[in-house]
Length: 89
Image 1 (tube, rainbow, N blue to C red):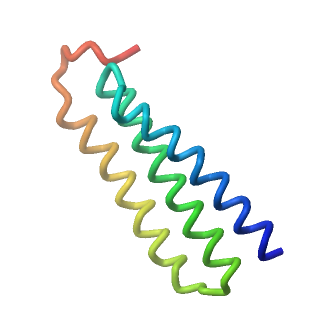
Image 2 (cartoon, rainbow, N blue to C red):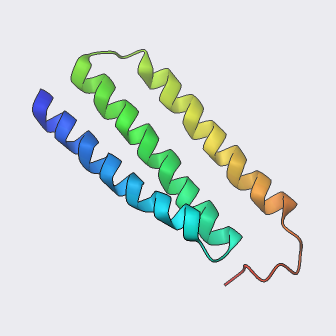
């Protein structure tokens, strides 16, 4: 089970690394924000997989704090976007 969890965490890290390319090259603010959400979700998933694999259950609290901060980042983007920014699909 330990090797499966570490393999799954490695896979998630690869997907997050691919999402980082979208953050750097994204054509608009909305694309970059969605990629940042992917990075946040992937980071939470990696933390949870590592904590389960190593029986470090205190890391779950850190993952929950990251999830809350990710939501606040999304709200901040929506609140600060100009009304005619053209990022809406």
